[in-house]
Length: 309
Image 1 (tube, rainbow, N blue to C red):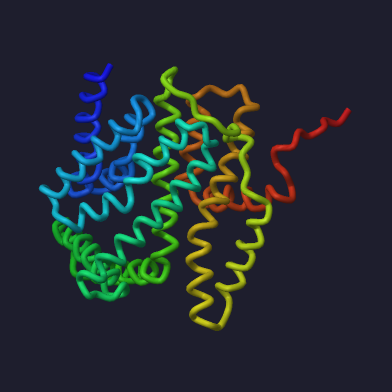
Image 2 (image 1 turned 90 degrees about the vertical axis):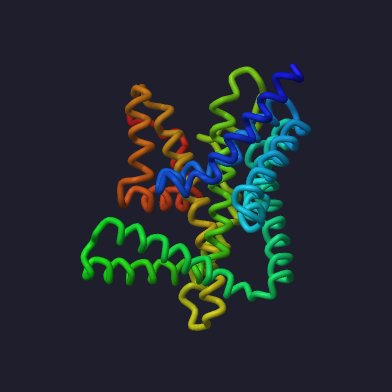
């Protein structure tokens, strides 16, 4: 058993390294595999316990330090350490999945803020300058890809304008988008832990089709919407970042409504899977599902309807 756990730890560290650095090799697909970097160690913790997870994280950190340097190592520790170790440990202790997500997500943001503060203190940079430098490097990388595709000068100029606009939006919404990214990483990790669990462990909590956000959270969403319309730039900035966090949460509640609806249907798994795919990729369905999640507070879409006699 112990030898098997050690082998799993080494394999988990290798998979973590692959997921984390794959964005440089796989393009858009690599961006998705990067978000799964917490899953191998999280599964290891669920199966064998926290000490083996810590061992795998140390192996992963050492590998990243050798391959990519301190900046990438700090990014890994800030973004993936809590979902790799804390989230599965909370689940092992019997915490409900939504509470475990909340605790681990808040700890991730706290760790990231502490590491960022330490890096800024060490480098003497301002937060805005660091964000601008990161966004400019991403824009330059994207433009290089477009140039390699042998696009014309007119197309390149248009794409550069679009990339600059996207970078400007991200800069103003960076905190909210980062928090939303933390949430997505945790949710993907939880989803795959649930998928791989078999009979090795249990995950406690209400079924997803019955899950809903606290009712009082709607007031924060309303205030964020009004703040977005305020003439003060500071309030607009706060509203923008709050919405970047809250709207994905209400999309998740809308997805729970969709899940409840599909459970009542006798459709094949392939049809249900297609519905979920369309919900994510077919405009304007993501906006519709988010709206369903918001209005579920008043309409209660999951309440059984009485059939007319």
